[in-house]
Length: 408
Image 1 (cartoon, one colour):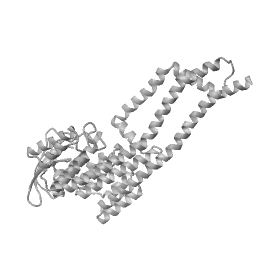
Image 2 (cartoon, one colour; image 1 turned 30 degrees about the vertical axis):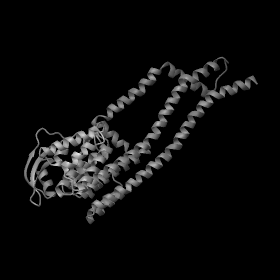
Image 3 (cartoon, one colour; image 1 turned 90 degrees about the vertical axis):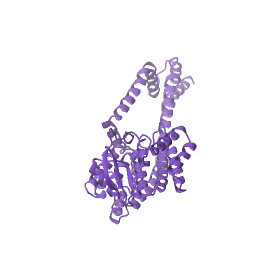
Image 4 (cartoon, helix red, strand yellow; image 1 turned 60 degrees about the vertical axis):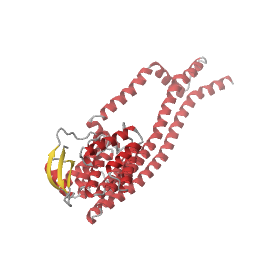
């Protein structure tokens, strides 16, 4: 969506200027009115492009420059200094000198330069959309308008910390089976390429008929030795084509949809997406971000393209004047418990509180699912490894036992 520059007056008469995304000038004017700003002038920013961050990233910051830990440090330090009534320019100057790395120092330097040019903090942040996502910028924008900027930075630091912890937990749960699978593949390659040929040569000297498991192992080993380029090229080509496919718009969307239905891991991915959705909606709601704008900026944060599309469909329904409960039900992606909490919150005017409860609940469920997944994967891996070892043992030792019996 295009970005518009605006000038307006707050409720206290103070003149405010900044930038905001919107479908058109009318939509931006409605958003400004919803946050009690009287628009005086709205112009489309020339040669603007919607940040590609939203489509490519699922976490705060640009991994090639800033880590989530850097943004947590930045948000907490800004909160502490603003809470102590330190002016924003002085606060940023101090943060620049104490930044944990040069990349963060450069980001803060660019913010200071923007403020020196007369921009407000929101506009200065928007100049670095590869670093600060729309959710972060929208929260700061509301904080500037309402005079609650310290509270907003505190909420953002907590949000990013929880987001980082959730992602670390999911990565840890997926790391174990991946390591085991890689070790098994390496072990099978070594056995077939170097171990079995030695036994095959020994068995050939006895001129005896070999058991079926042994013949299978030897045939597999012979194939791998004779056609090892094919054995390397086929998996590599398959992986390359798969990655190429899921990097297309259609492929990524289809893959993200199917991920939600994967055995064992689908539930984990769904709970992770719901946790991010609820946590993001809660923090934006408490900051006073209008529902339409909140749904727009939190959609990329769920980390799943299919889920993101559904949230955008919800936003379109809300923009038409429909209730969020009705739209959430129509998407068919939320469990009944989530729908009930949203319905109760919307009817009672406590949607922020109910959504926060959903986030807390699914954070606990996510931890439980990760533990259960690990507990379920371990016996599967043990049986899988035991099966491979059994086949190898039968293939190698059965003919040796037969030969020993014949000799005896």
